[in-house]
Length: 178
Length: 202
Image (cartoon, rainbow over all chains, first blue to last red; front, side, top):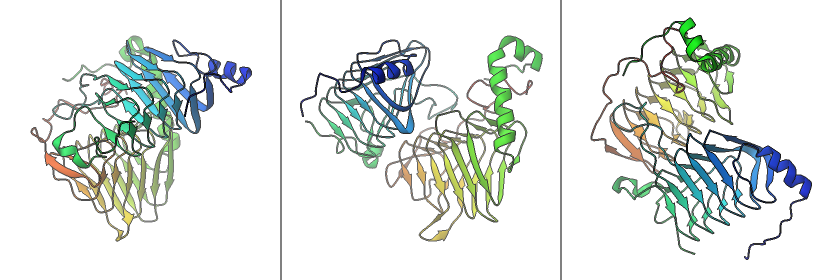
């Protein structure tokens, strides 16, 4: 499918959506927000042109922590109930489609070993152009989704396939090049 | 690392915003968790939907994390849900109890975790130990017990018991031993994520 460069969004709807996204550092042309969206954090959230946020079924959360960058490209669709959390850097390429209840985070927030209250280092998450993320998929810190790849619904993508994680939504099996 | 205790006055002076957030969370807990047996200083930073026909016991300083989706606690007639001290429940957590569910102390349940004790084999109790961390989207099947200090990876479905000090991942979850088993004992309770200093003030 060739993505359209012209927008179907009514100018008034685009204006209203832009107001809803007032916390974002940058919003491209003709955004479309349905339902609720929560943009928070002191970092910068930058959205491309013709972005579509589908927060009708469940609200969408975009979070950029202090000094963090959350960059979303053009023509991206973000499904209901999705949460994207950047404490350092999350980049989503042009024409990506995120399904509902997708969770993308670049930090585990708690240490597996030792004191659970300690926050580990962030690993940037990159989703390249034309990728498609299925419903309820989880992208863990350091995840990289290749150009045109498809992450299956409920799939889990992590930095490197750990031996123990073979059954965890199968990172490799869940993706295929497009 | 134990942080020094602050008096309420010091707390208000140094962190006025956090003081207000915490006071609101305490009030929200009183309102939304009014049908539960609450310990001291139970916080509800986010919304909680409670349908209680049994007994829900929430330990001291247990907390509900703020988020867009409300947490849900459902307790059937004669059922018991116990949440230990200093445990935290994330946004969108759903716990359905028909027999008994026990959650230990200092346990962390991330967002969209689902625990239910009724399934194919009827009602079988679920037990979650101390210092357990269930990551985002974990589903715990009926009859499962998770040992102290274990971690369950994001999106996993736990169908079998997880021994203490293990890391479980996958669907169905398989466990491996963590090289550092149960976390070292700490100076004090973990407390809500907003900050550790609250014992003296609240």
